[in-house]
Length: 386
Image 1 (cartoon, one colour):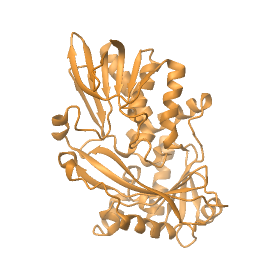
Image 2 (tube, rainbow, N blue to C red; image 1 turned 135 degrees about the vertical axis):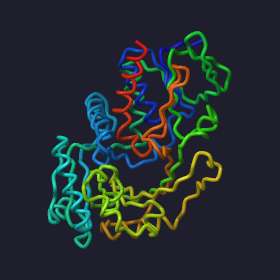
Image 3 (cartoon, one colour; image 1 turned 90 degrees about the vertical axis):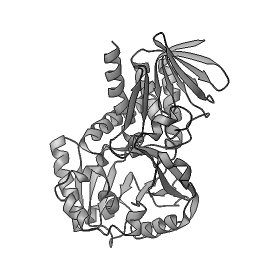
Image 4 (spheres, rainbow, N blue to C red; image 1 turned 30 degrees about the vertical axis):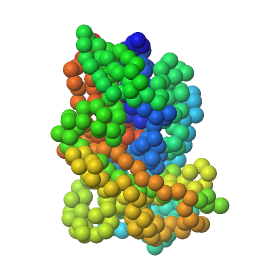
């Protein structure tokens, strides 16, 4: 029987982050993944690491994550590109929110700079003059390739800290006994640990299904698209636009936010489908465009429609064309992303029998904030155990 100080179940970014910090603390750690590598939210996203979009609490976790991503990148290539993030305002209301957030950033000592209309047009080739009023730029923020970054952090942690990575393994049961947790795999193997972190993302049927059904967790479906390569056009960094300004939590802390939101048409197709328009150009020249948000309670998970809705994609493409003149909007890929979030709290964190720690429902904050959040979470749990 293999025995560890900590076993982390689920190798998405939340699980990877907890395994990484446990390893840094000198513990013997195993990271278990039911697939070869993660296949869900950790790889089905833009790869935009944007603390600027989060409320003050989670921005701190995001800023900590930025530092960790960059430190790892110095030793091992995890695809980090520091090209910054820009929010592009389309009207005076959105520009007011950018100005107010800029002032908040100064108080929080988080670098950002306001851009004029002309500065935006010069910095971002193809941006339409008819769309943009101005921008707010965050120089410290980064992009990653989500299809590679998680895998590479696992490889880095295995090489530097002797993490034991156990892929293609399904955990079907956990039992606490005599101060330890016994884990049984689907093939009948037994593993043992002093602490288990269950970071299984959207999997709510295998372990503790009744607990999840009683929770306020909900599933979120997002739709994204990837163009073919843009032959000459190069757009750096993460591009977030007016609807993003009206959606992200950081702007909810701005003085004018409530009055501006009160004027919006709540019956619009854009609001109904939770659409805001983002762009990110990959290193191969292709551009990711999205995204939308559809919701379903975990209690009704079986009723969740997982099909791609082409009407949503067509709407997003039409709106994207109002913002940027890309050389081509021809698509090579479309996909759905899925994550879970809570309706009344910012994350689902529950400890069972003092040794099993369930961490899920981080929402759209995962890639940006998990490394910072996990660091604090591990410190907290280990201090209790000490």
